[in-house]
Length: 327
Ligand code: DGY
Image (cartoon, rainbow, N blue to C red; front, side):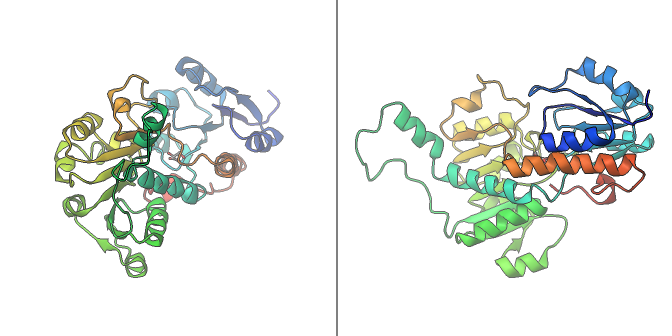
């Protein structure tokens, strides 16, 4: 051993981040676009000081117990439900995430899904692809206007706030449900803070922005979907587990809501034969809300900066335990 600390990077990521790490550390790199197999991950962690992990890796008590040298887990995501933060803390391992750098990109995509699901984009594309576009039809594929419609934000972290700004710009009315009040945004955007059930009852579009925790698992299930308007749409860019997908399927087929757009599913990946994918009114994409070149690069370099900071004896830039989780 040459005295340099060892860093494990579990996926092919932006080369800028790898270069930063290689300059200072011995880097073991799972250089693939597929996740590192669990057995390889468990054996590689043994002599690792710093870990750059993705949301696809389970960083749990089993793994941490095999990592006596580990000092930092830099999760390349703002969400960190894949990391057992308490187990890490108990072993003195610093966990970090990537807040702030993906806010606008993710909000832009959530907003895209709001527009796309309300204006029936999937159904319209299928219509053309199936050769059904025979004429301009005044009654074909009609949807609601979003100008004047109400957007209900469940959770109000950075990304939800950035979605709110975009929705305000096109004339949507806004409501949010959060444990914290945001009086400045209420004032600036004419936004109302509402009880969860009221928000579900009154919104034309409900967009989910809470982290996945024990408390938020299946936060939206059969009861909540029944509260929504039959004309309402649901958008999930948070985590798949926040939504009960079986209940969603029943709601979409039974007409208790009008449509859904999911950037995140449970499980991920969603099998290609999944029933939700057969529905015209359910649009599913593969967890890409933060997928711009600049943002994915910045997420990787921020994760690298966190590893460098901790392994050179400085405080992490974005430690997860210094503040409450906010998506
Ligand atoms: C996150 O950061 O948590 C997203 O889900 C991926 O960008």
